[in-house]
Length: 555
RNA sequence: UGUCCGAUGGUGUAAUGGUAACACUCCAGAUUUUGAUUCUGUCAUUCAAGGUUCGAGUCCUUGUCGGACAACCA
Image (cartoon, rainbow, N blue to C red; front, side):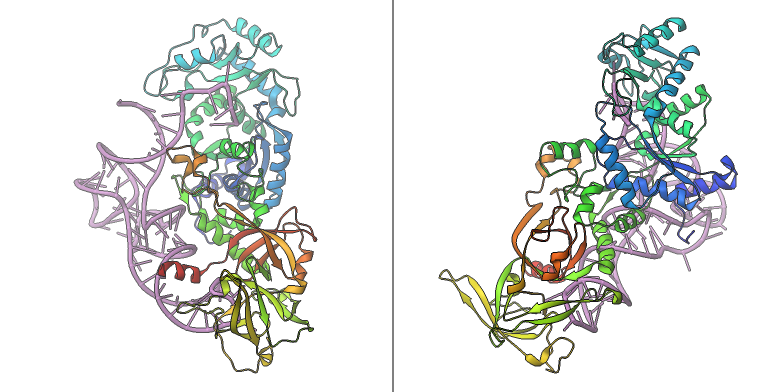
């Protein structure tokens, strides 16, 4: 253990351990429903559940809460497993709530037998109407006092497929006047003649989440069942089931989900973005999904670090996406190799450099990591530089190229700008400079000192590539809380595709998902579809840019 | 006009009745062959009112504000 203060969950668990509860055994679980892809909010839960187990020498089960066959798919199961593995966690056992359908059914029968559950013929609307409101008590169903034997018979008939969807439900008989709505005879089973991704057509009745989750925890003997705040009001119901069924009492503890600004983490809304084509899929790099973030260039370590830094508490929160960006920059700064790429190219001609010469320069792969080695990159008379790095009228403190100004080309020579060429409309089409032959990087005897350093790519060897520049997906901090539909806040500039960028030659070897720092631009990763002859890079995050901030301030 | 939960700098999280702190952000500066990184520094915090106590962010009461709960979703 480290010297960090314990969060409230760690305190509870260490207290349980010192009280010898469960003989010190700790078993948590991560219980996703396979009805969508995992997102950053799930990452928090994953890090929490697996992290807690690691801290206290326990284990963590992966359990799919697959009680609603309509929305669940094997595709989601597979993506969830891949994402958890990618994040770096190993589960103890892989379970499915559907593994427990027979047991859950028997639990239901037991409650019926105890006179604590009944079959209701009411429609969904009637049930809702009799349920009351948070401030008004509900009314009992006319079917509430059916004899036990009749309930048993009816429930068996439900299972046997005698009834149509919605025709009957099985409800717990608790208290229609409870101030807690979840105790007003909650539905335990409903009829759905639907194909289930694992049990096929074996069942036509399916347990509600509330009748499955706590019991699944009990079956697995989960010691600490950690979930988000909205399930707090369900806890009395889960405890009621545990007591009446006399099963293992897992302890549920709730924590506040982590909300991040300028994005959404509602699975329903994420699904809508995908199905309506607002993004290119679940793994679109703009999505806050684990798979989207992976494709964007986020690393498992950076996501784990983020989850660690945001902490765990019980109050509502809105975390600045800047923290997430900080975490990935910090990781990639140490670990991503540097490369040079020009995204907004303009020609730079070194007039005093020989026409027919190409030098191979040595460039460090990562100044932060001496073990990262170096690479060779070509230098010649004709180069590509960023159009933004030249201006005819430099503002104060401008360290880039303008007539008469000198800069160093990174890992190459110091050059002095001599002017530019323009087309008939006055647009700059090429920049001219002279180089200082005795200023070569590593063997500079020129004595010239310059403030500015620029990246470049040698034109003859440059690799054309596509660059996806991503911005935040939404224009407002909390799209879900705004008055209008969340889609109206989508950022129209969330993706800018650059098709005429140029990369240095070694980038031909870039492997899909390999991360880089493109000097002075930001961190990028090769897209999953990138190929040597058709390079595609996704911008993970820009570098901090104090000059851009300076320029913005003076405007 | 219910039940439950919550409230500490701009953001997130600590402080477990005893000097309100850490990180991110912001701002200023130093260093820099990435206007990056690194380093230094500055600004800024206990929802309110009572009470208990030698002492309250912490305990109690009341209030205020925010959130959750009325799916055959999870």
